[in-house]
Image (tube, rainbow, N blue to C red; front, side, top):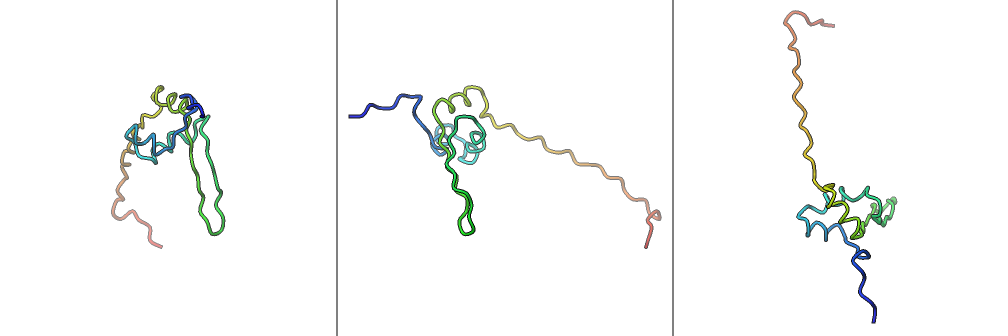
Length: 95
């Protein structure tokens, strides 16, 4: 009989964490893709096949990111509209 893995050895997929935390899979990938300790299995793009990337997130990394508040997705600031000066009639140069 094999021993069950210890909690630090457990590895999650982005879909599993998305189901636990209530985020989309794409958001979980964006949160974890640059974290240290995350395993990325990669098949590069070829002429006829697209890139394939699979993430495996260790439990320790998952707990570290969500305990530090790093998973809070910050809303991006909306750019304020730029006021443009209206052209005065008669000031345009015609070619």
